[in-house]
Length: 253
Image (cartoon, rainbow, N blue to C red):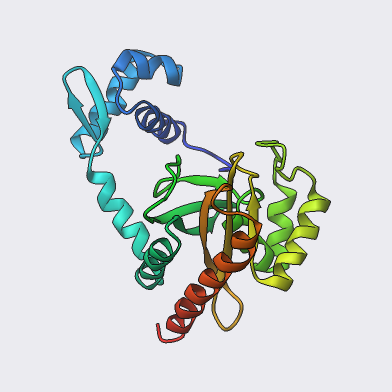
């Protein structure tokens, strides 16, 4: 994520307050002040301003995020011109596979989940709309990395801080670049338990005729149901069909 050259401290403090409310689901002034590291009076001023504008509500002694953020999210989502056609195909992927299907885009070097659909046997994960993840260890992330402009890919990889999330997580730039080359050739990216042990997936990028990457879709599920034959055969074919329909519709937008 890009760092501001001259950050406004008051704005940063407000964002820190909101992050605490998001993480806790609701907190008192004292709790927020302790987490942010400022006085209770300062926190109260920020919360009062947010409450006055509908971004925070007060229930008893606790402050919580207000529904005004849903309005902001709606307008942010509208920036993604292919949202409606993509979500329709993600629904189909979930129904056909019986697993969890996702639509993800890249922003500031992170994968942002914009839509999820649950099939009959979908696993429960921490993934939700708005969930952020690094690109190097997910199928959708690697699919987008592999097909984006080389200059941008090099810049994002140079800024990566690799973390060993599971024994299979890629933590070496050279190994990642080799895998991205294979993904470009095949058109499908895989997550072999690199994010969560025992959870695997496949994904593919959504591109226009000029090769611009709009995002990626994927199907994920437990390895006990997603053995090698299914993960690298049946699932990729479902994804390719969905992506083909989405990309055909992009040309008419």
